[in-house]
Length: 419
Ligand code: ADE
Image (cartoon, rainbow, N blue to C red; front, side):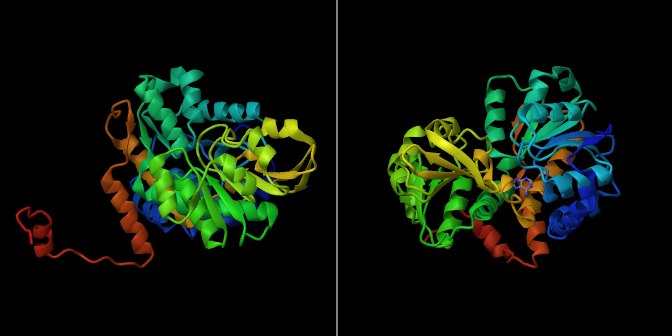
């Protein structure tokens, strides 16, 4: 280890930088913002601690923050999602980074603690582990923090609960809740990257499979629509009536997990809830069933209950473990029940992370330049920011919009107009 990084293998830096360039060329909104703000240096004097998957797309965000004036210190937000070549490239580029693939849980928190050593003025989270560390171990830092951002649904839920309990120590922007984030990254990003992870780990034919998605939030919906498009018979399990109704009208079969367990070929959890697939479901599954998770934490599948039932376990392919049960049935668990899209594949494609990370960038600029601290609570991304990100994305795609005429504008607010 040197003083500004700990990564697996610095010799991977050139390969990592090549992949970062690939991502950069597919993230035109972030590129436009970097060029717009490079002169102004709105993040000058800011120290940003980030805890978010170390991928090629994240590297583009980190370099954008740095180029607009910030000092950055980074750790990964999941023990299995760090791409070691990207971590090496960032370290070689002078970024302070503590991340490697396959870190243990104590190492994971050690890495976060390293990033907190430079007394950040802003935090950036994906899952709220970093901000939680400030609130539990480093409360001394809170007074110096202007604010934080949160990337994911699970993290926003944690932070809203904390805010409601009056425990939040500094303001946070819920980047996840921007329309240009959740309606694209969560749906199309999770859908494509989760199927990508399943295919890389198993190489199975999707067409004709019974594909069970637990949870029909935005991420579950993304998985289900992509699996349907690939020719799967899609089954959704839900606890929420409105979500179950949407899934039904979107053409998926809705049933309980107890029913689905008997007939499913591939299972993916996308609920954000614990214990969604448990021992009694493993007892019902067919020989050869494939089980994985795309939710933020590895709590959705009760892996200890699979282990208890297994007479042997072996890694049969990368990210694919075969559990042979006492009665001879085999169940294949992918990526140890962690995020299959990031552990077995590369995460969401650059084109969609472009919008998510444009929102991260603009939210951090807002927190840095608000003048003084925003009120201590969870803040939404302003509608104007959402519209700006959408407008820029459309521009870079060469898509132009119609414009309302003056008569149409007047009509829109004319409550007297009827039949
Ligand atoms: N979350 C999902 N996909 C990601 C990616 N490519 N980079 C960073 N975070 C992600």
